[in-house]
Image (cartoon, rainbow, N blue to C red; front, top):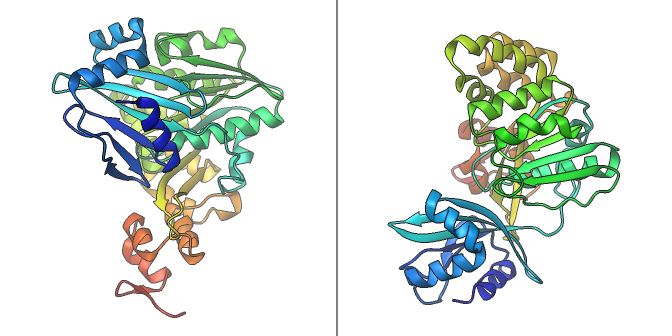
Length: 359
């Protein structure tokens, strides 16, 4: 197996992921669909040897011991990849996720201008949420890039592994990788205050301690960015509260009602022209009304405030989806498959019987 050839092919076909599993040919995810290549089936020894060369001896020993490994891998002339190594029926396997070499800006990604306003906030917590592979890291990278271009601050990122590389511009940027520069998100956050940061990016809020430390950082005058695998703003808030013991949840709600600044929930849709994927976003900005709902445990009412919060830069997922469909960016079928309320979306988009009606 020539890994360089496979990764080069992944870039050529604009795929997002390369999967290597023993007993199967290499597979690639292209426009969210898994496609098997025409290469021969991979042997367990072949996969193990390739991954050992990627990891190096020290990290390979850690992989054999801990059974999981996340690293960054750079192939000169081809690109940068996030590699997750794991075990499949006692055989090593891996997923190589392609990371764009250039960080796209908020404008280049077609995101609403409010994301730049959020990136210019002095303090608080900003969360990017959505399913795996929906572009959360890309969204946060664009916001960090905006800070890097416009604010003379110290940015510290804590990632597993480091994905997008930010070259210091107006900001000073420190990027720390789990397993190389620090032992864990929580360990890094416990010490980050001594590194004099203004902005902190935490790759993922994985556990109670990391969430608590992130909230504390937001309370103490830092702008904190992170991600969660949740589908919308209401679910995100409830998930953050629910990880705490019942006797602490009221306090955590009060803290979030003050420190949470925005939740950006997103997914990727196939473009109607077949030219790749387009992001669709729900944007919640913590207005006084939303802060009150968080405090009073009425997160189920947040959706209606987002729906009517256009003047503050807010939008629901379906509102953005409707615009993408009306502009011809996505098909009716793709839009209906992603809509939160398909029947309401069908009515607003004037879609009947599976076809778009004449206006």
